[in-house]
Length: 431
Image 1: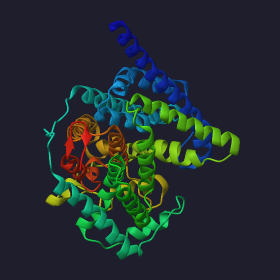
Image 2: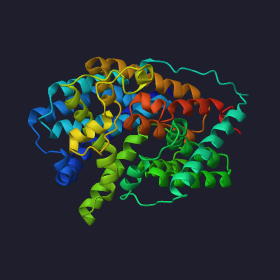
Image 3: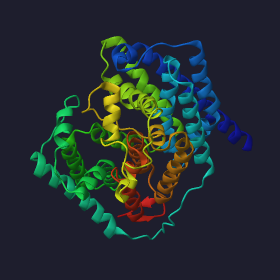
Image 4: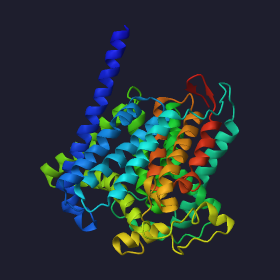
């Protein structure tokens, strides 16, 4: 019996490693054939060299034991990190391979950042909230749901007239319009938090077979998309549905790499057969390479300028003045494209470097892993399908926002409080 378990364990690791290598290979093919030819004017160049290609593979292979170990863990912190590895770390190695103009210091700092993130996640224990089996915080649980739903309905009524919008390519006018909404700060916070928490509530009601409530939440999510046209709002709703129907028996993070591999292969097939790139636009370009490219743009900008030291986020409440009068995300967008209206939000490496430079590369992995472990402790006893959408919602937040923005404006802090308020008994969540 012990020999069989050991053999399965070894095969599981080989399964993960093979998936990781194939994923990188397909990512390179997609970059060379679709991303660079289509969006090369945005900086997605195709100027590889033998040296940078070797460095990029050394980057990935040397971290692969830690990556595979993360993939084979079943806790939610490893699930979150697994998603971030697939949507940020691996695309970064592909970009390095095809961009021999990247500074070696950027490559080295990226490597240190991910190595520390992997090590800390595997070594720091869960921060348990001591959730009791008979926990009965249904008042807070219900209050948060009502508060978020009421906020979305109010904003949709006041600013858009209950607008429903279903287009994905014509949302930029909605975003420009939303920037002009003069709403109270607290309402704005709740609106942003709703982007993250409502898909989780949707899956919760599906699991509880409260279909009417689930449909109501879905309608409110659609109203929320009509407010500012955030693609992540629709994306998370779509992923929530997929997760509810498919994740029950595939709750191991090692399956994420194969799922992403299939998605990238499908985008290549679409391009080769139909000469279109709908899937590539929303997956390899928007989800994978765009945030990864932004990491280098942030590095390029701040490597010759003063770091912000949280003066545009946490410390602005204590009257610390940032050296940058304009929002940093808009400055980076202008630095990248020359369009001051373009906002280049980004998290992970970008967040660490813009605030503290090389020191941030050491500090921020500890901060992020602490957030992972808080979420892990507060979701004790959750259904696998609920854990899946929690994993995706958290990953999307941390990928696209600085950690302080994700924690407060992005709703991660309220999300953790919400998790703690969910009544549960044994392994089944009960209302």
